[in-house]
Picture 1 (tube, rainbow, N blue to C red):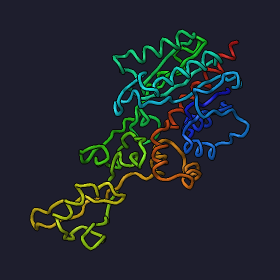
Picture 2 (cartoon, helix red, strand yellow):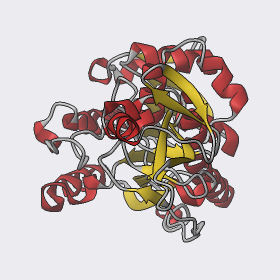
Picture 3 (cartoon, helix red, strand yellow):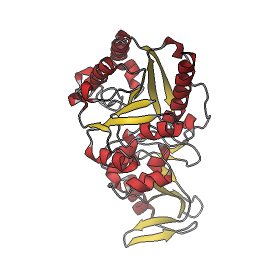
Picture 4 (tube, helix red, strand yellow):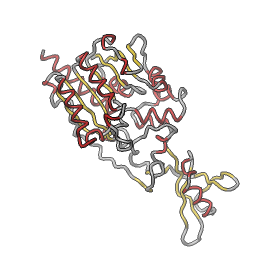
Length: 342
């Protein structure tokens, strides 16, 4: 099955569909130059169609394809953003998808966005999307899927929308009913970027803002020993060591907790001393990409190319590879079944 990968980012759709089998990418579109650098390092794109800006994409210059896939920009619909919807220029990019769909008439559509899309503007935004695609003759099904149910330890809910021209596809790709049953375990509350989670559970949703914010989505307990930040510098602290309570509290409750290595402490009620409990740190770029379903040998390709800030951004902006793989397997099987009947 031939497909184009719109808003391709680092290539989560392409990686997932490659794992699913039966898919061939014939082109992609990505305006972020850093993300596209990672994409082209991961995949052989020589001779494929490419467009930087979807608004400039000429349907006549795109080879025929069977599937259009993409996670169109979600900031306009996310509860973390301003929720401008179609009033935000990023929100209107959906209609570029509709424009290419109307011109090329692919057999299938696979789109991804944040769950906030479903209730934005009282549901009218999503209704407009459904109306546009229905008007083009597509049957439509959608479901909010959580990445934690697809083999990765990340709680990341996203709505996936499947469109098809052949009514015999109805109900064969969505819904998924399996759940992993793993829970997100928060040890210490706080603002986003300061909450502490247990590594025994799942990670919270990766953010995509620049400057490493994706790595500040959560801090994690990882065991002893820890580094203690003292007035004279760092020293290693172990259970039973006495350290300065006031200084420790000052440096863990302010901005320094955002450093790559921080610590949490507790007062001993009988001795009045402090005992370090756990070493706490944020996720590394490699771990963020692992949470999105990328294998280490693929991660090793992009790590030397990008800054940590860019890697956090690319991980947070991407789709979870294992979710796309699962949908892709169903889509490919349905296509084979329908084609066999014909």
